[in-house]
Image 1 (spheres, rainbow, N blue to C red):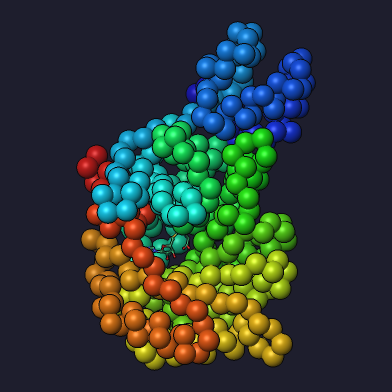
Image 2 (image 1 turned 60 degrees about the vertical axis):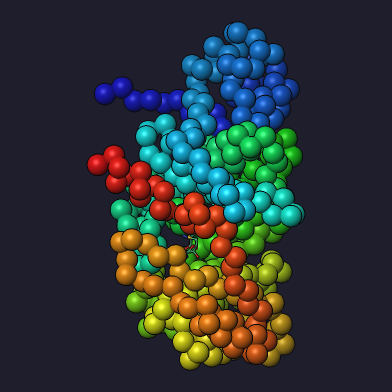
Length: 355
Ligand code: SAH
C-alpha cells in the first residue's frame, strides 16, 4: 500500500511554513504572504501571486482541504447557523455559529465522535472515530467565516468531542487561530469546555494561555456524577475542583461550570444546595474569592436516551438556591431551537441516513 506522506498545509504554523520555504529554496516572505491567504480560505491553486513553480512544489508536498458544507441550517428564530461539515475521509462533524450583539461566536468540534461516554450526550453514542487535526479544527472557523462573509470573533470548543482528549492538536489549533497573520482571535475570546480530564487541565494551566475554561460538572457529588459521566470514576469531583482552583490561582482566569438539568437525576433543590456547598467550600475557602459562574442548561432530549429536561419551574428554583448562596447562575438561552442546534444530533441523523 502506498503511504501518503503529504502534510496538511493548514496544520503548519508560520515558522514551519517559513522553514519549509527556505528548505525549498524559496524566499522566506512567501510564507507570511501565503499564511494569511490560507487562513482566509484561499487555496494555493488560487494564489496566482505564488507562481506556477511554487504552486507545483506545494501540491507535491502538501494537502489542502477545507471542511465541505454538507448541510447548512439557519434558524428563523435567531439567525443561528448550523453546519454539517464533511472531512476529506468522509467523516462528518458539526459547527454552530451564534449571532450575539458582541459578534459572531462559533462552536467547533474537536473529534469525530467522543469516547467519554456521558450518558445524556448524542456525540458519544458511536464512540470516538478519530481526532481532528489542527487543519480540521481551524478549517471549521475558516469555512464558516468564508461562507458567512463575516468575521467570527469568539470560539467555544463545545462541539463534538473532548478537546483535552486531543490535546496536542487542540493546542496547535489555539496558537494558529490566535496568530496575528491569520485569523487573529484573542485567547480571551476562546473558551474550552471539558468533561473533566484533570491531567489535561494541569497541562493546559502550564501553557499560560488566557483562555476561559468551562467545566461540564452536571452533578454535585461523586455518586450522581459517576452515574451520568463515566470520567468521574477516573477523576472524582474533589480532584476536579482542586484542578479548577489551581487553574484559577495560576492564570487568574475565571472558570465557568456547565450544569445540565435532567429531570429527577440532578435537578432537585437538595442537589442545588449541595452544589452551592461544594463550590463554596472547595473554591472559596478562607481568603480566596474565586468568581464562580454556573450555566444551567435544561438537557436537550436525545432520541437514544430517556433523559427528560427539567421543568421551567425546577430550573428557576435551582438558580434561586445558587444565587442565595452567592453563586451567579444563568439559564442558558436556547439558540437555534428550530434547527436542533445542539451538537451531535445532526451528525447522528446523517449517519443513520447513510446506513
Ligand atoms: N467534551 C466537552 C465539550 C463538548 S460537550 C465537555 O464535556 O465539556 C459541550 C457541552 O454540552 C458539555 O457541557 C456537555 O456536557 C453538554 N451536553 C452534552 N449533551 C447534552 C445534552 N443532551 N443536553 C444538554 N447539554 C449537553
